Image 1: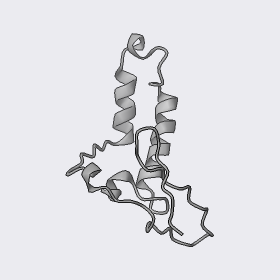
Image 2: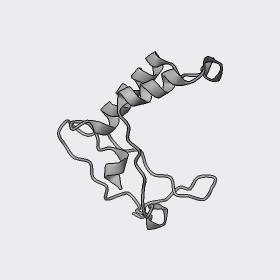
Image 3: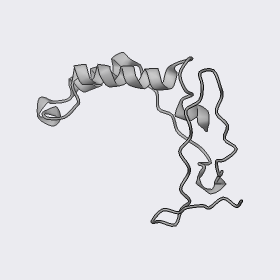
Image 4: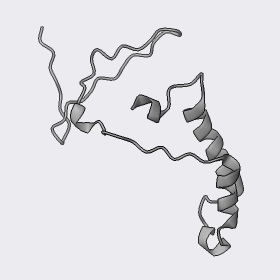
Length: 99
């Protein structure tokens, strides 16, 4: 039986939802379509120490940050989430590791 490919409104193939894997089992990417035309030829990764980034936020004038998420508590929370997602040795690889 031939597999029917469905397309979205832009004419791109719709990927099937993947089943959740049992713990410890590695995912298979056999069904994925690799499109080399969308891979970047290079990437830029900017890194900064958390203390330096928080210090920069503290130095911003109150009028510039009023009503935004640029405050110390939100900055610490977002940096913690970023570090967990991108610098963890037990979590998924960071985006820059992908490329």
